[in-house]
Length: 68
Image 1 (tube, rainbow, N blue to C red):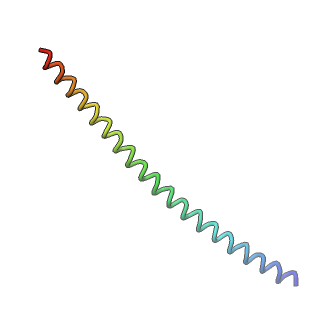
Image 2: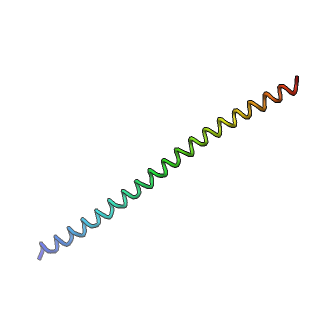
Image 3: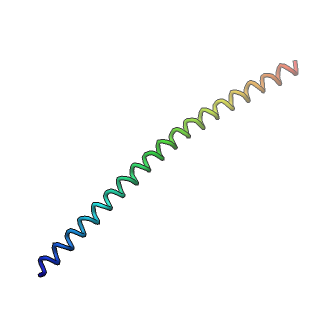
């Protein structure tokens, strides 16, 4: 009797552990995708900042030429 109860609880426990492992794997996969997306966005932001600095330098040169 106790053995049957123990086995039922063990099976339930194993099932719950498997479900949690699946959720952990899915969450990890989603996090990795978000980190990858963030990395791409950061690279794009750096590129845009550099582009802005170049444009500002060009504009400054234009102002200098206009004053001559």
